[in-house]
Image (cartoon, rainbow, N blue to C red; front, side, top):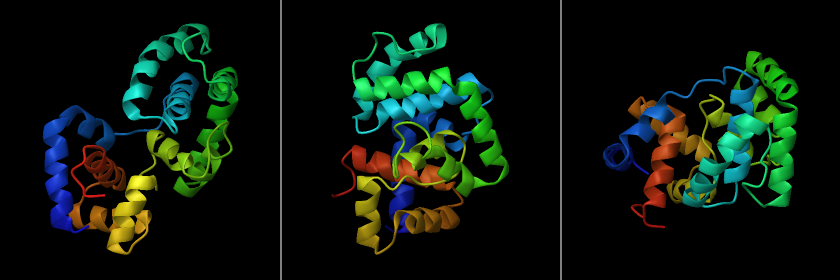
Length: 186
């Protein structure tokens, strides 16, 4: 992908959803254990699921997590439900682990993310982004775009970040959204 292609997608994404662009550009680390646990829970819920479906479930689940500290009957996937409940129950301990990793840099945060329940080798990047690390998630769509450019996802997003002055996370989001909208020819 060229810089010009990326910038064209960036403009279209900004016009489509300016609020989302502001959120992706201003990710900061969680402020407390509950904020941390909610971010982890969202990524667990969202993994392997269409974004639109996850948003609907999340709108029901979030209040239960805040009020009860567990999923309750808002969601039925047994593995994800168990993992989310575990994160909520142990949020203080996990948050302390995150804070320790944060002090040691982005690579430590990414490695820490993979130690959490239901977070795997790709999802750890999604979670790290949601926790404030400026990194790309090498999902299927970004892998295809990068392969066509003859690069890895991290190389592609890093190059476009340097060329555009946008964060790696922003570049990642713009490319993902362009694919999700069907603008990029897969």
